[in-house]
Amino acid sequence: MADNAFWVTPAAAISGSFPDGLRELAPTGQVNLRGKPGEAAFTAGVKSVLGLDPPTEPNRVATGKDCKALWLAPDEWLIVGNRDTGELVAALEEALSGLYVAINDVSANRTIFALEGLHSHQVLMKSSEVDFHPRVFAPGDCVQTLIAKSQAIVEQVAPETFHIYVRASFSRYVGGWLAGALEEYTVRT
Image (cartoon, rainbow, N blue to C red; front, top):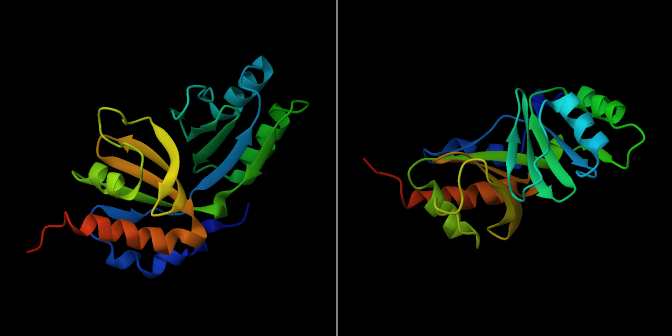
């Protein structure tokens, strides 16, 4: 794994001007995992490495001790955490050896924004066609959607906190869009 401590995303150029409630998170390890969830050896191998069962219910997140797995498709998950991704990929490859799987370090692919606060649901509903109302989207849910016409994964991590994963190359644009959408709710003194 490359040392991500020095990664700078395009959003870094504008993140200092983000309103309260929006920030860019530090680079985090991300691994894309594909496999057959109905296969006992696959589930057991993943659990032996991650300490969690990959979620099989659509648009759900499973959280373990030092990582989480976001459901992306019936046979695909995004593993996110602070573990060394090189070691994580190697451990998954060993545990899943002989099975039909794909394991790829995609850490440099996405920037993660945290959107927090009382109006976070409204900001997302202004930015996407997905219904992010609390009665239908809650902590532990995730969804792939478009935010300002850019592909994104949205994960709700707490009642008023979301993590938004966007392609690094679109991070400045999406960060600016979210900042503008949040500006309406910013209290001016």
